Length: 450
View 1 (cartoon, rainbow, N blue to C red):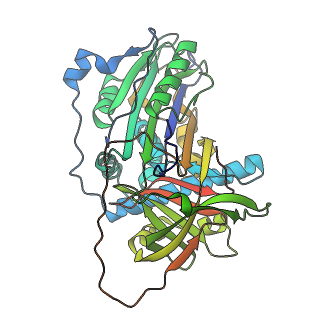
View 2: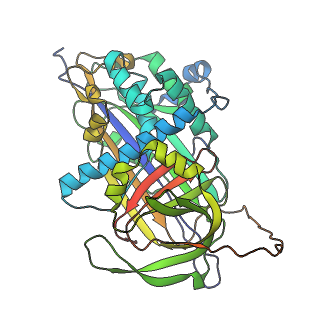
View 3: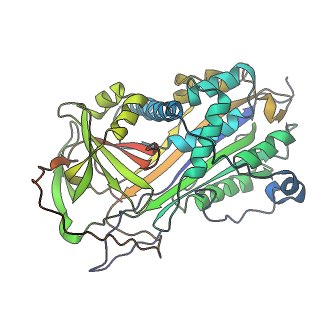
């Protein structure tokens, strides 16, 4: 992505890119816009795009879920899934690496890839996946509201969000036969692109090219290999690229100290601004910084003496929704460090702990709705890569201009502004301003920049 630089030019924020991949494998063969967007990948001759076939086009029509009402129960279950995904992912990484590091997850991307997968599950496997994704909501209610949410997310010239789904199935060296109705349903409901491929080295390159194109080049090489027993990939990719409603001027960026937990103090570029929405619930203080339209950056600073993991451990989906709903319109002196983060996660154990172990059991998983195979079909890997960059540089989104006109206010008693300076580890989220749900959710433990 090109960056705009040069003296006198406006400073902007750039936040981009996430993808989730789900791999399913058959065990022991022979033994029993918003919406779609992003660039187009040039694929090899060995990969066939079945989405472009006349039969599929004639039989498949995109389903409009935009009129489905999103309930408070869905908002709470979505927020709960988001927080559990971040908490369990941090636990998993901390145990593996024996250290805490910056991390971001995309609950929306994970839910979309897993929802496509759930649509091919049956019996107890399907029930576990539905419960993990939607809590007390029925699978039908959760699915319809998730798709309604996806279709309702806005995309503007300077606040762009787009997503894409795809399903890749092996066409050579296997007796797996995908179910035609399953594929048509995924194309209609999830706007999934359908690809048949030999699952050789060319397919590996094609999948990585597709992901890179759909994430505006931010996620590369999500797969490093295709195992011999792999038969199906279900992939979601999304990218978000937005400009602040009020951009930072040069004089608002100054060096300051950042205090990582139990690490040496860092000198960082802190971006100072006057914001108008304050977040507080006794355990955390924070602010909302709006993008041009439709989205906002939510910054959450745990109380002094409380680590981010201690704060997250007590935070529930209901708490998060209430925090957003009780936001106070009042002046805030805010400080946000420039930072970037890349996260590569394997979510197998995370999803098992969150309530869907059967899907990973090679003997007991039931994905009979996906097709026929001599070996049982199960999930062997769930992968997610994310990338975020928050700074004063540019975005290639252009053309649209926002002009804010302010009249002189009548004389009133001055309001003492709140102060929220993010100079120690904090939690953040990219939320839509309508439902106020996290599309991206992360933690800054220490400040990293590219």
